[in-house]
Image (cartoon, rainbow, N blue to C red; front, side, top):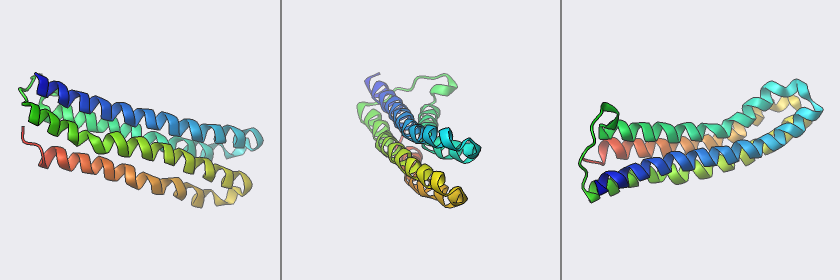
Length: 157
């Protein structure tokens, strides 16, 4: 059961750190969003998108935890017997999620805050402004894909 516990701790930490990073990133962007909307409420649609972008990493953390539970068979109603080595391998699968999602969400929040200042000054630049934090999303997606590849091709269960 120790192997299973280690695997579940990895899945839980991946989801929790991704959610924590998203919360922080959305909060950073939200502070800037409130300032923009206080002066230009007509920009609500663009502001909402820029504030919401750092929230995607929380979803990626949830998806990775869901896939781990699915791969282990827990969602099918069975508790697998994992060796400690197998548990550590599953834990390792979550490391890109733990760090990649956590860090990218915070930096995406900062990029969104900067983009919000750009939109506040020149509303016509909203298309370009959205691209700035969207580029950070690339690394969140790469973290998710890395974990998925490791989970389905690197772990023998």
